[in-house]
Image 1: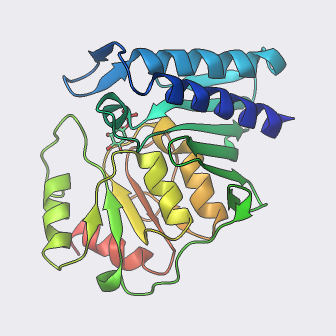
Image 2 (image 1 turned 30 degrees about the vertical axis):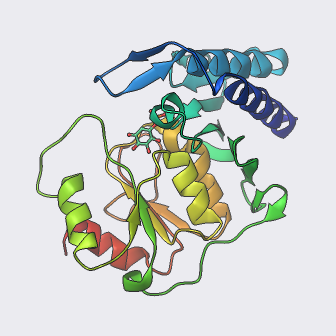
Image 3 (image 1 turned 90 degrees about the vertical axis):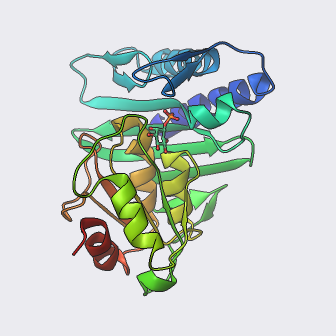
Length: 256
Ligand code: LIP
């Protein structure tokens, strides 16, 4: 039932993303000039929440644009109505809807759908991860030096010894390819299906990674913060790998 609702909400959102992709639509700024929200994020969010509410009027909701809709329920839906809004606003079809379901503090279900590539990633706690219904697995590369990585950068710059530019420079100076797709949810799913061997980002929000981190774990990968603690969507740093390069990438990220 939860999964059926999750897939229905994902599908409803995907249709909206496709319908409005060619524009025109309104775009406005949030925390910084390039932290964007479009009219389509809001339409997608409304459709997702309406679909959830048909079956679960009392569930807790945490969604990027409306924030928290608090209830006493132990089930929380964590929603990004468009992950990769900057891409969407620029007509770059690397964006998706991402929805995770948390129960009693544990992520139990997650779905990420990029309607432009017709790729639906789903994971259920303990039952593995799929791409368009076919089981997926992380890559088997063992050397970070031969890996293909992906990262993302924040819209609001934070200085610091290990800021995103310093880490990026450290890795690319070793000749390791690091891509930047612009959607953390897609980055995670592409680690899950073995296209990337690792992903790191300094400052994510719960909705960017709630579904994707379960998809990576269920595909056999490892997701932690930069200190190696199991990832929680309620803190900002994320390091996701195939497991085999995890400690080596963690060292690179931390400058060790
Ligand atoms: C974005 C992420 C992206 C990250 C940005 C932002 P949005 O989400 O998916 O990878 O680098 O900081 O969080 O705002 O485009 O949906």
